[in-house]
Structures are given as structure tokens and as C-alpha cells.
Length: 169
Image 1 (cartoon, rainbow, N blue to C red):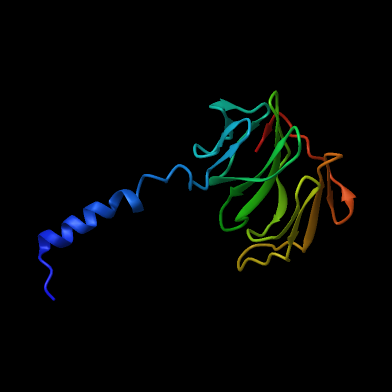
Image 2 (cartoon, one colour):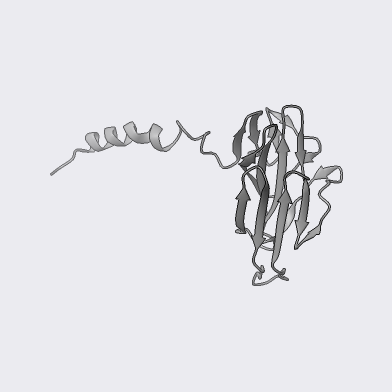
């Protein structure tokens, strides 16, 4: 069966909105919809409803934003800060309410694929394997657990500071 160039071009043009546009914003890994507005990390800074957070959250090479759970009065985001060869990724959990956005300092061991366990409305666990890059000093395995009810982040069972100093960067 022969298909003319015109027929093939028409079929391809008709499918363009399906593969490049239409739903692009809904599927953008740099954005997540919360009940309190759009969280957007596409400019490598976190904005909620078009406003910078306080403290400001700055990414390195890119920032992925994902809504991971919610409680009655808050939504929780997991941010992934994309780095470079020496440290491909760090993470942050951000609490978003109707009146505030509370980010925590970046954490992780540079591995970009931790095992995630989320107990909706209760806790978020990120278990990182040892990270051993070829030309750089590696890091040991680590497990971080964020308790939503207390707002405490623990690394291997010990509380770690989560406050950002001026900016979360």
C-alpha cells in the first residue's frame, strides 16, 4: 500500500497536538498542582502561585516538583534538585498550606534513585544506597524518614536540622 507524502504529512500534523503541547503543562515534571495553587520549579527556583517561597528555594541544574501526600490542612511536595557528576541529586520536602510554604534544607547522599516509601498523611521515607561515582569520593547508604505529624526529619534514626540558612540552596 502506497501512502503519498501529502497524506503522511497530514496524518503527522494532525497528531502534533497530542504529542507536543495540549497536556504538556499537566505532565511537566517541574510543576505540581496542590490544593493551594501551582508549585513551579521550572525556572530552577520554587514558586507557589507565581510567588517565590520564603525562604527562597534554589535548585542547581534543575528542579523536579512532585506532590507526594496531604493531610487535612497541608499538601506535601518532594523536590529533586538535579546536580552534576559529583552529586546528581538532592531532595527537599515542602509543606504547603493555605497561608504558608515551609521548605526544608536539601538532604540526601547524592544518589538520584532512592527507594521511596510514602505512608499517606503520616511519613515519607527515602532509602539511599551507597553512592559511588567513578571519579569522586562516594557516600555511604542512608535512610531519611520525615514524620509529618512532628515535622521532624531523621537520618538513620537521628534528627537532622532542616532549617534553611537564608535560602534553601
